Image (cartoon, rainbow, N blue to C red; front, side):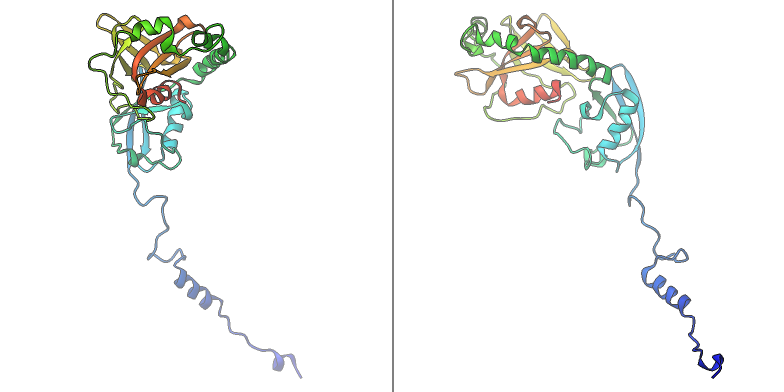
Length: 279
């Protein structure tokens, strides 16, 4: 038998099969029925203004960008690492958010809005890290103010603190709540409350976030403390007065460097620490 009589003829169905698959999947470049999916169904470009100390930056981003993406852009402009950045706006509270899943739309941000940035640059962090190491190594010495030479004594029982506490709570002090942690008010000015400072005068604690400063106001004076200079925040409940605490802002390595505030509502203590130290 010849080869011609034994060779089977197989029809070419490759194109037909390919077209069939293409029509079923819609992946063909020739098909216009189903265009490729985009990264986001709704791209909304916006411009945000970032105010940091005396500087102001404009950042182009998208309403569907994550908070982490925005912080990365801010980092490149300010040298403030994302993990220490605090963004403040009337629509943003101090509630902690997941930077990787929170999108700008979730924060109710709109085109042209201004955000205040609070946080130390890498060089400032490097400087304060040495300070914090010193403070840590001197923990025993900073504990001496509360412990005396033998047994630890509560702050409210120590003579200098007891003297101030005898003046009693200010008339319009905010109600204190024990065993509760509340976020600071969302106002850009921060937290207003009536307290007594270490001289026994009525004082008001104010966060000036646009200046990265903590202000302690009395009727006569205003003490302005850069937040980057506060090395530690010391606090202790006032015995016999549930819901109120003594709070100290430590700016040096000794007891004398601590600025004391009395009758602070206890529910704000943790948020005050986080606002200043990023705890």
